[in-house]
Length: 416
Image 1 (spheres, helix red, strand yellow):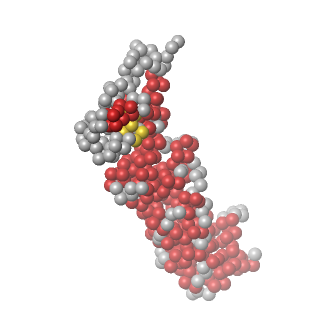
Image 2 (spheres, rainbow, N blue to C red; image 1 turned 90 degrees about the vertical axis):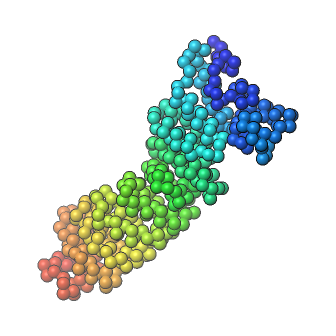
Image 3 (cartoon, rainbow, N blue to C red; image 1 turned 120 degrees about the horizontal axis):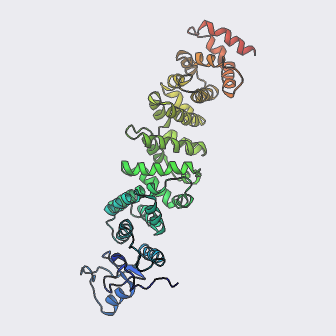
């Protein structure tokens, strides 16, 4: 059976029509006014008839540059492929389908993209079919071109706003870490650089879209090393600002997960940048009022930062550090207790100043460490407790405030 591909026997969306010939475009191109034409028709208008205005708007042309409209061409081809399987009596495409293609064409051909991108995000939210249609029409590639444009025109307000809205649509599309195709496109260096800029300078919504995309990349086990190598202290400051966000708890949780992924597998330089960005101070001051899940994540970050000398120094210089960590041990969860002991062990092993040892005694750290000795069985946490007592037990015993009932335990540990 012969497929129906005759342009004259099939109705086609009006946006696919050349304003000059009124026929379906095969090679759509856009001129400086933002209007798209069939290449042969506009070239004949400009170069054969020597016209100096736009046929549709009659505006004078500043230049005669002709730019291929690849997105519209893909839309036309996709429409032809779907239409070729239909009989002439088949129902026309859905309203959403036509609206989607019209928006894509408008976005591609005009510098004023923001309102159309907002409408696009609403349409993409409606159903999975629209998302698939959008992908098949080359919509993702179009959005990514808009996103990376801020690397060239970072000071242009319209470009910046279009990037923000494009990230909103991409966040809607990136629903699963198993979406390898979109992950690969988002992971490209120029796209990652654009998202880093948006994280630091974007609106609240744009920053949320970006951190949500980053969090999905964490779930997909994206390797952050190459990307982080090119980022400075300001990038970590922006992540910590999101961690501190009291309005959007979702953004705060995403930022914590991203930081753990970055610092957990990165070099010492990244941890140093996070310390310079105020990581220890921010986390210590947020920690007292957090729930179980956030407490564990924040303590994990503090532990990672304390694995470098600069992090340990920042920890010991903060007056609330030891009392806050101590309060979380045996109070939140077994995981929090384990991480808290690791933090104290790092401080006791590599930064055991007299003030640190005294504060551990005054704020109850030593008492809680003794309580952990009562836990049945062997564990890495219990072994760290024993090591701390062997290192500093004799020093703690000399303090007048040292509880007398704990001296027997110290003697037991030291003799074991």
